[in-house]
Image 1 (cartoon, rainbow, N blue to C red):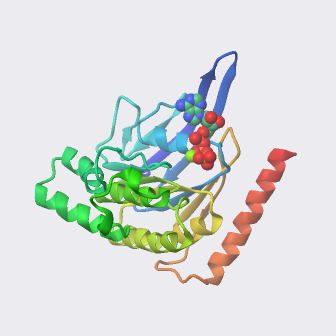
Image 2 (cartoon, rainbow, N blue to C red):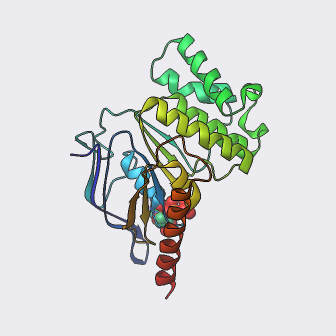
Amino acid sequence: MAYLEIANLNKSFPRAGAPPLEVLADLSTAVDEGALLSILGPSGCGKSTLLNIINGLDDATRGSVTLAGTRVTTQTRSNVKISVVFQQPRLLAWLTVRQNVALPLKEMGLQKDEIAFRTDRYLRLVGLEEFAEYFPLQLSGGMQQRVSLARGLAIEPDLLLADEPFSALDEFSARRLRQEFVRIWAETGKTILFVTHNIREAVFLSTRVLMITTRPASVHLEVDVDVPHMRHPDDDTLFALEKQITREFLQMEGEAVA
Ligand SMILES: Nc1ncnc2c1ncn2[C@@H]1O[C@H](COP(=O)(O)OP(=O)(O)OP(=O)(O)O)[C@@H](O)[C@H]1O
Ligand SMILES: [Mg+2]
């Protein structure tokens, strides 16, 4: 069995005075340990919902998620250490940047020294060491997102679920952080799932691209990106793949509109 098995996942949300909103429809996939999987799909198709279910924050209506052999529900968590970088930064306004990053580490029961070490390390990584004593509302939106990324990485999870971690950033920061992100992934060999709207980002970063359909979402296309890391920004194979996936994406959207 694969590290993460998603089998015939269905999710619908009840609506007042209307039939339930079907968000996921028989979505199935399998993810190997150590994969860097990107999830591509149109806005509102159910990507964040999928991550929530994998993280045990919400239950599927039907179907199952199995992580390292354990069935995941809101009641049963696997032993896998998961961290999430949400689409919004979700920082605590009354804690400083440093305290926000340190909080989950405290909850994990880490020693003070280790907490200080990791907090400094990951704040430096996202370029915010000078802002450690600021409060979130004293930062720009992109900076808040970088704090959220530092907080997720500092946990040093077995499985990182990142929901559009770079989309709120300017191109310079995004570029640098993408590189660091891949470097951390390559160094640690941990599994990463990350949601993106950006086809180039998906192709250039990941080992596998999962494209999902418009709502209700199922798998439209799964492609392995068989190019070793670290990758060169103008690799021809990657460009060709980007073109192919873009074509598929446009075709899928066209079909959805027709
Ligand atoms: N808790 C909820 N209750 C009711 N409906 C929900 C809930 N969460 C999500 N939805 C609905 O499910 C659909 C999918 O939402 P989701 O946030 O998963 O999309 P997404 O693919 O992450 O979109 P985006 O790319 O814009 O972030 C939307 O129509 C949304 O309104
Ligand atoms: Mg989303």
